[in-house]
Image (cartoon, rainbow, N blue to C red; front, top):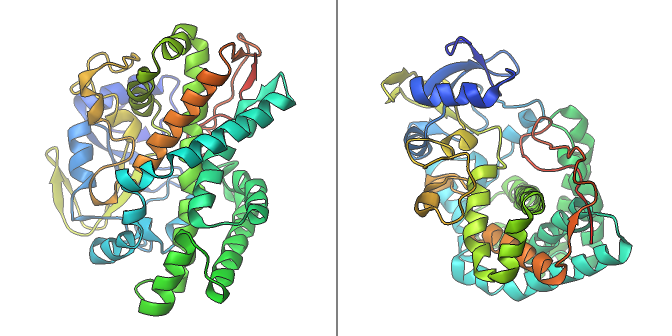
Length: 394
C-alpha cells in the first residue's frame, strides 16, 4: 500500500499493518478524510504528545479548516463548550469545573458509584439470564453517575437515559434528531436551575453565568451536553470492552477474584489497548510548525491518532499484548494530553474500577452467553469505540 496515499480512518483490509508501517516510516503523513478533505495524520506517541501540547495547533471547531472525522462531527465541531476553544477561553471554562474532577473530589463520589453499580447489576441479574451487559450495566452506570454529579433529578435521569444512546448510534446525520432531543432536555435543566438553583454542576455553571458572566448561555448548554454525552459514553465503552476481554480470557476474571488489587493496573492496560476515542483528536494549525521533520502550514488540518500512539513499538514493549503489570503503561494517552486532557479522567478511572470490581465480586460465574458468537463493535460506525451489546449469563 502507498503510505503517502492513505484514506483515514484506514479502510484497507489490514488497517493495523498500515498503521504500524506509518509509525515506523511516516509518523506524520498526509491522509484523505471521509469528506475528501486532506489532513496530517500523527501516529507515534512522542509526536502525538508534541502535537497535543503545541500552541500552534488549535481546538477551535469554528475554524473553517477544522477537520471533520465523521459526518456527525460537523455539528459537534460548532459547539462552543470547553472542548472546542483555545488558550485563555479554554482555561476560563475549564476552571469552572476543574475542582469537581480532581482526585480528591472524585474520591468523595466513590461510594455513590459503588451504590449505582450495585443497583444496576441487581436489576440486570433480575432480568436474566441471559442479559445484555451493555444496556443493563455498562451504559447506565456512568450515565447515572454523571447525571448525579450534574444535579439531575431522578425523573429527568430516566428521560436522559432513554435519549442519550441514540445520539451516537451511528457516526452520520441520522443521530441528529436524538441529539436535538437531548439538547432540549439540557436546555430545560438549565432553565429550571435558573429559576430554582439545585446542587450540582449545572447549578454551579448557571451561577457562573448569571452572577459573573464568565460563561455564556450557549457555552453553558454545550458544556453540559459534552459532560453528559462524552462523560458517559467513553466510560461505557471502556467498561463493555474490558468485560469482554475478561470473559474471553477467564483467567483474567479469576485473577481479579483472587487479587482485587489487580483491577487498577488492568484498567490502565485496558485504557491503553482499547483507546475508545478511535477516530483521533482533530486540530487545525494557526501558524506554521514543524513536526517530525514535516512542515505543517497555517490552516492545515491535523488528526492525532490516540489508538496508534498507544501501541507505539518505540514506547511499549510488545504493544499489542495485554500486560497489566507493564511499567510503561502510565505513558498511555487514552485521555489525551496537555491542556485539553480529559477533564473527567480520574472519574472515568474510578468508575471503570468500581464497575469491574462490582461485577467480579458479585457474579463469580459471569460468562459469555455465546462464547463463539460474533460481538458487534461500534468503532466502524461512530467515533467512540464500544459494543452494541454483550450478552452474558451466570
